[in-house]
Every structure is written in C-alpha cells, then in structure tokens.
Length: 369
Image (tube, rainbow, N blue to C red; front, side):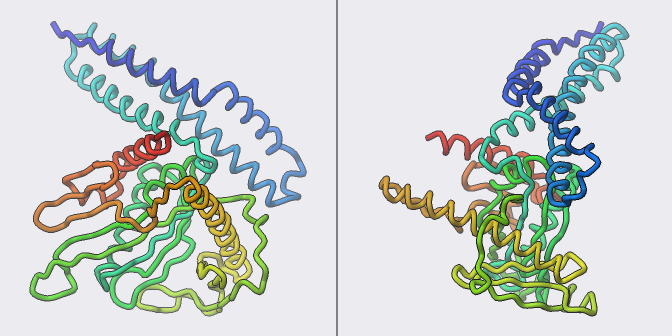
C-alpha cells in the first residue's frame, strides 16, 4: 500500500501563501482593477494617448498580479485532490505527478514571497536595462553580449515582453552597449539587484597561447518613469547627434539618419536610441530615459549627502558583484550573497531566479540593518 502524506508540506505552503495574500491585499487589488477597467472602457480614453497608455499598462500589471495569486490558490486546491486520488488509486505515476506539482508550487510560492519584499518606491515598475562592456577588449564586448542574451533569455522564460531600444555593436566581437526595456510588473524591483560590475574569467577565444583573460561589463537598471517628463532639461544642457542605425560589423540597417544620441553635458550621461523608425520617436524615447536617469541621480546624490552627514560613507557603485568562471572550475558566484552555481551554461541561458531571489533578500536585510 502506498503511503504518500505531504499534508505538512502543503499546510506550510498554504501558511506562506496566506501571508503573501495579506501583504498583497487582494481586496484592494481587485478594487483597483475594477477602477482601472472602468477608466479603460471610457469612450474618450484614447483622446489622450499618454494617459491611455498609463491606464492600460497599470491595468495589465495589476491583472497579472491578481492572476498569479488566483492561479496558485487554484493549484493548491487541485493538489489536495491529486494527492487524495493518488492514495486512493495506489498509483505510483500519480504520486510522482503530485510530488512534481508540490515542488513546482513550492518554487512558485517562493518566487511570489520574494516579490512581496519589493516595496521600494519604484519596485513595481517596468525596467530599462543597459549593459556596457568594460576593460578586456574583445573579451569584454563578447561578455557584454553574453550578459544581454542572459537577461533576454530570463525574460523569455518568464514570458515578459522585451523591447530592444539600442544596440551598439563592437568592431570585433560582441557589443559595446545595449539598452532594452522589460515590460512586466516588478521588473525594476526584480532586476535592480543585477545592477553593478560583472566579471568574466576564462581562456580567451580571441588570444593565443591559451591565456586566461579577465574582462568586465557593467549593468545598469532604471525604472520606467511615467512622470519623467517633469524633470526639466534645458536645451543648452544637451547635445543631440543623429546617425544611421547599425548592425553587427558596423553595417547600416536603414537609409535615414533616424537613430539619436543625446549627451547631457553637465553630467556626461549619454543615451542612444535606434529602435523606433523615426528620428522624432527615437529622440522622445531617449529623452524619457535621460530624464529618468537624472531624476535617479538627484535622489542618489541626496541619499549620499544624508549618509555623509550621518558619518557613513559607502562607495558601492562599480563594485564587482558577481564573477563568472569558465576555466578550470566552472562556477558563477555572487560576491554579495554567496549564491553560486556550478553550471554557468544554464545561468547564461537565463537561469537567474536563485541569484535574483538571494539578491532581493540580501538587499532587504541590508536596508533593515
């Protein structure tokens, strides 16, 4: 007779899930969806395109939040039935199916629990990610492209819409930089723990004598800010250059100067956009990203000043936060959390959830200290 009794595990999951529902406040979320649905159904909604986009985006994100909650709740109920049937039928295949579903639910609820830790001012927003190659020549530009693929594969695994906004290809291998938007609820809060300097150590495929090469790439993550236009950027503070969009090897991919590069002269911040078809659209997209970066820079400077006045000075920007070893020992190790993986290939293929969850928990503990 089969004896399969996961009742204690299921009860533990239900307890965790109840805590999550309390934090999310399903009743308030449902009311918010009803309000936004009413706004989205207004006949004159699209008379103001910008407002319409805000409403529909907010509605989509909140509906996705509620769907995650209701789906897990239904799966917990179905699991009880599955376990009962497996024991009644004394069927090993049914027991194995129930065990797999229990493990999958444990993972899904764990991910949802991590999301409840994302309570920062901008955590619920979509994200704009920029990757830049650093020191290391062709290895660095190749590494930057590896990181870009890693994050795009991570988004694909989660079925998150992604829009590549700009790519600057290197003359040799890889990319100098790339910027893309991940349009999903809590994308910024989730991916913001990936910001920092990443290091790759491997036998270089571009050099001779099987020499080990260390290269670097920087990852920047900022939230998508609807109110970014409120940041005043005087025309005299920017330089706007237009050029033709380019592909790998520097080849032109269109026949007009539609790509736009904006340089903010006082800070040296540079934003390039070439995804849209028109110069006007690319300029507008670049200005939104520039305004967001200036807003966040101002907040960072204010926070740094407060820390300085309090006698605490922490220089964290640019610190190496993760290393990828592709020679000898195969290892990916996060230097902040201690999280590691002995399978770099799966990490570069987008298997980042464990690193991101550890990073979010690490940041929460750090903020509470």
